[in-house]
Length: 108
Image (tube, rainbow, N blue to C red; front, top):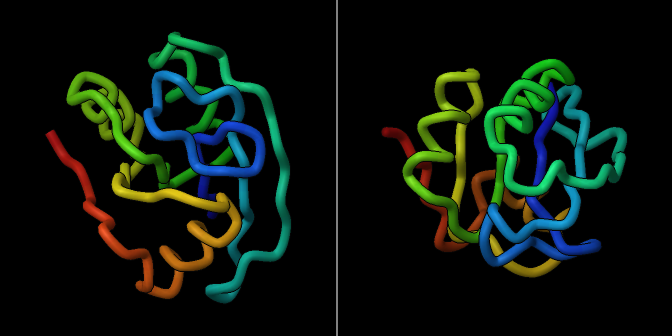
């Protein structure tokens, strides 16, 4: 499984639509074991959802996201978690260990 964090550099993006890149974290045995950073495909949410699904992302963490983007991600089998801020790695680790403050799981 992989967790993706919509980011601006190494920090969580305030809004999914303005993220410049994704930080990806591979999860094994409930631990983050690998990370990658890839540029976002800008406002092509459907393309991003398909791309994220293809690389086995199951969770997307961001600051905020539109309901339409939540729906697209959910249809791709990706759980959307909002309310994150700060360092992307720390946000992913906090989510993994149920310690992400202000986290909301979004569904449409």
